[in-house]
Image (spheres, rainbow, N blue to C red):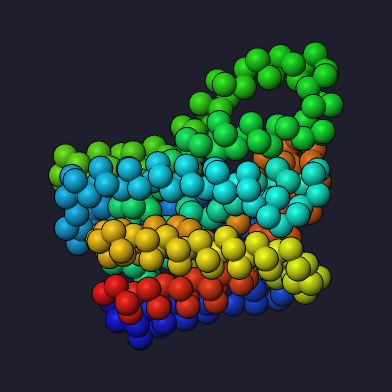
Amino acid sequence: MSLSVILQQMGVICILVAIGFYLEKRGSVDALTSKQISAIVVDVCNPALILASILSGRLTASHRDLLTAAALGAGFYALLVGLGFLMPHILRVPRDKRRFYNLMTVYTNTGFLGIPVARAVLPDNAILYVIVINVFYSLLFYTHGLAILGNGPADREASDTPDNKKDAKQSPLRALKNVINPGTIMAIVSLAVFWFRLTPPPIISNTVQYVGNATVFLSMALLGINIARSHLLTYLRDARIWCYIGLRLVLLPIGIAVVMHRMSFDPSATLGMCLMAAVPVGNLPMIQAEKIGEDTSVLSSAIAVTTAVSMITITVIISVMTSLLL
């Protein structure tokens, strides 16, 4: 894929984000509507896009590529978990906020933003690596992620009540239930379809294609809506967020791409992993923090700033890497 095509595709994505921004400023979308659309994207459209990517017939990846993707996914999150402990110290984050920066480092927007962007701008085989990363994400967040978040004062105080102690005993089962969500299920189904070379009837594949096609517009428009609702100009003054962006969303993806290129990985794998390292902070840590009564100002500001800035950083990084690798 040429540099001009990448720039055009990222330009389209920026326009879709701008449409969502405009709809919010115009008052066409309220909080309930955006929440309902988000549920549709997460539970229906994004899972369909994953399967549609596998059924497109354009993947030339092999079983060995899938095994390579699994190894890369495990290594990727092992690196992020380690970096999650280091980043708060590097940025001199106050002790009571360190776990938020830990979560921000490990759990970025690999699904809601990563999947549609990968489908739009990366080579077809790159989606295989993106799918595997999202499986690892779900498995890890509801184990490691909840453990990190549960180290906060609000959670410890809440756990003192009898009801919450009972809930805590059920937490492994609840964590397993959370892992089994539409996105994870469809990702595993898609990998099985790829592995066994299954071909569903046209009525199924066409339906999946139509539903999946709605993902890019809806997810990008929702990002624009969320940016419009945030106090972006205020958050942009936070120097620590900019340091985080430089280290986590710029240097890390470039470093991963350079190392993988020197190790002679397939360009699709390199670009897929590079994109997964470049996506902004995800919403899931903030949603979980809100559930246990935590102050989510750090997470919400990071989501707003990194999402807005990532439209530029992803475009530049993926464009440069594509021109060098393809």
